[in-house]
Length: 241
Image (cartoon, rainbow, N blue to C red; front, side, top):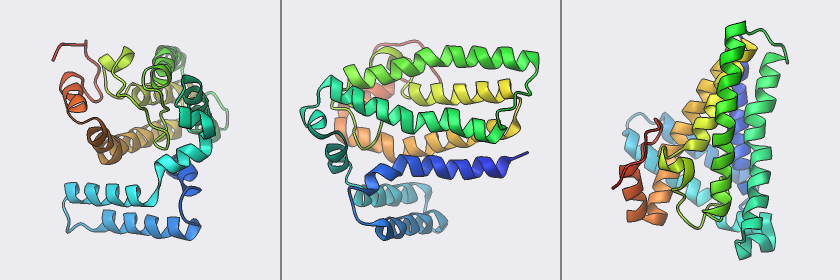
């Protein structure tokens, strides 16, 4: 089982998520210094989990100038915050990150070899087909409702709460994880399944350490009310406040 390959691929995911902001800050040695700080914080077991999360979030915020990276990447389209600028940024993000996570890495881990059982292939294809509309809706909501992108360097202007966001707070991550599990079943490959688990863990940590605190700081009471209405991971029918 090629689980070490899956672990190596997780490094590719983290690199893809953080590569663009590097060009908005210091040189590569500065990135290395900040990475060493994060590793040191995570290795320090004398501090509590909440304290470590706070320190990591502080390091990330200090290291990367997200707004400046966004302006440099998207130019005038970002400055005007038009839906077309958001669409351009979202397309670039999807090609770079989800494209790598759900296409390139599973293909690399499996060598393109399909070894799934008939049942596994049927269930896997069903999961992928069910997840694709959810992922498309997730992306379109960022563009047309939020006027931004799923990338941390180009966030939305408005809190996105429509469409699938009425059922679950992280529909994009749910969709990607479902696609990966479907691929693992269809390919019959344990390494791809391990990759799906690692990606799901990475999503969860990212949501807790960076995304939710950032949204709470940006949107305040509006986001708190949204969190009370809608679960983080397990979808449920929308309900009133």
